[in-house]
Length: 68
Image (tube, rainbow, N blue to C red; front, side, top):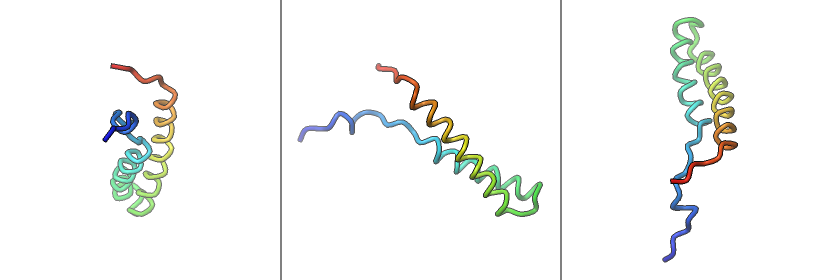
């Protein structure tokens, strides 16, 4: 079987997903410490993670890839 070059190339990570996970975790801690409401902290953290992760995805998408 022939392998498709697109499948064998290294895929770029999704920074939006990483941002949501890290934002929710950071929001959990802030929710416990500042808001006294875990749900509110996680929601705000996840929203911030979506925004920051989307910006990072756009920046890496527009950046030319290095060919090794």
